[in-house]
Image (cartoon, rainbow, N blue to C red; front, side, top):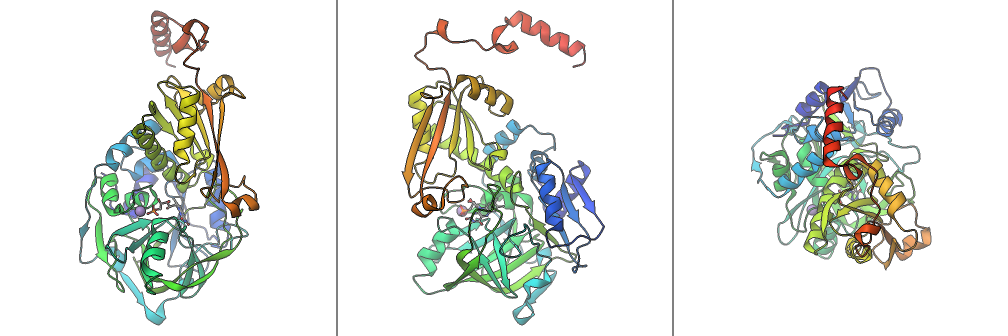
Length: 473
Ligand SMILES: Cc1cc2nc3c(=O)[nH]c(=O)nc-3n(C[C@H](O)[C@H](O)[C@H](O)COP(=O)(O)O)c2cc1C
Ligand SMILES: [Mn+2]
């Protein structure tokens, strides 16, 4: 079972040696985020900042699950759980949905601020990167909204920037579930859309909000499944939305049906600032509720942040399910978080050109978030990047092994490789690299890998392994 709230999760990552507490004063203006940024780049711990300049009542946790050890604790597992086992547990729990329960009161209501008393600058919102368009509040949040017609409730993770005391601008992509709800249900009716931005809830709820989940799917049930216990929800003060009761902070707001304003630029998840400032949705804040001595959460967006870890695992599992559904002889799929969620490694029982082409076609059919796919034989461990680089470098034919698929309208606009012109046209390309032996090659002409498991007899393998064991290696 996972931890019921952020504070018990933090105690657990402190106990496992994956949290550093900082009691010296740090600045919300780039300093605390800079510390968090460097820690991601060095595969370091999460940071708890207990003393933030100008904000004595507040604390901030940076990068709660940027790293597999913390991610494992987030699921209630031991910190040293292997990545393969994390994938296995996630895939099992993701289909074991557990509905939430509604409670009357919760820690997130300890302090309630409404109406004219609302001032977003009362929160220690960080200036995350130099060059960002403003201070970002929702870098690790849960944004809750309800469909105007069906009552379907959606959770997603979308960033929000402070525009002024009462107004946020945000970047839910038009293709996100929130974007669709707004454009289909509220804008045509001329109605503002109530939202709630929950920050510092239990970890499974955040993982569910960040996950790739089906249209009309209710992420509160997914959160229950991932954490193996029902999430407790409590009603908002100014709308009939429900938020995780243990949240550290809840911002209640309404997205204006007729207002847009400047949002960004921002140091984006692929690890670059590549976008310009653009018009985006405006959310007018109606209430802020929070716990006493509240903890704000921050993901220092970029290389190896919490987003890379969470979206890579849920994305890879959803790719595996899709390939299976379409008859690809897939064994395992891994998305290295270091790829900025741009590359997938797919192992197959039988490879070759047709499979490589089929995989790249399937992965670009809707949205093309992944633009590079490495296809390897099943004796290559997809979780072992050394083995994957070896296979790619030695088995991929530079000409015949490269399968490029061009498309219009589906490009990932945040992929830094594309020119401004390509982004405007939304035309992009994806490629699969076939790192498998052609199935038509006769067995006797297929090279044998010179590794212990492939080139030595079972008898020698066993003797070597027992020698290693006896030598304490
Ligand atoms: C830390 C983090 C920040 C994210 N920021 C955004 C964002 O600003 N806009 C967006 O459209 N998606 C963002 N995403 C991706 C969405 O959360 C993800 O696509 C999720 O599946 C959206 O839920 P939905 O399918 O209900 O729309 C972010 C993900 C993470 C992990
Ligand atoms: Mn959704």
